[in-house]
Length: 247
Image 1 (tube, rainbow, N blue to C red):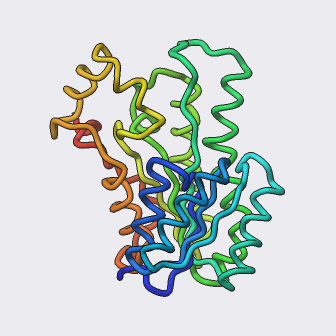
Image 2: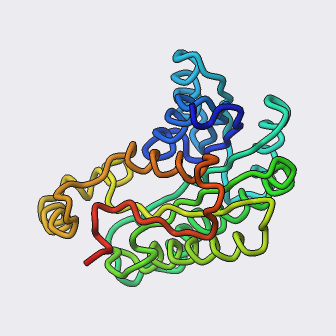
């Protein structure tokens, strides 16, 4: 029960890494606000938490909207009385494999992956300062190295890495801020890519551990960074990538 007495808000909690993180947080003793653009998906995650004996809240929010971010934090405070932990897991991948996407696609990806991370963090900051809390952002191996299918995705995730460092410096000592940089993880977001052998097989070869990641692999790292065991860790960008970035 490494997160006993913690109150966590997880964006993107309706599927993939966000869902796995919300479920793992609850198993570790946290009260969890499951937030997603898809309210039904958020409710499904929250219901799973509650059926296992945990305490959960489901809410809908578009993290690109400042008002939505403020409301989701207010909902958590109204239900649980405080907020100790924020996980910015909401994110999108590019549509298609365009090496020079149009400005509308660039803006969509950057708005969700980067601006959404900032707006959610900014909305949660006062409550996290009060609790001495922690933020974990979701970046990517493609925020550390090249190789993404999209310049918009690479730019957004690289910016999340450096935004993490900046927030860690400016919001210390009351708030710790870190990010996780997943390798290729088997989620609904990546399903279409993984189903393509021409993409999957070369990508498998880039992961020295010989497999692609699972959402639980990332959730485990987020639990560590969110726990008191990581009390001296801030500003870190932790690759959880099967060795992809070691090459």
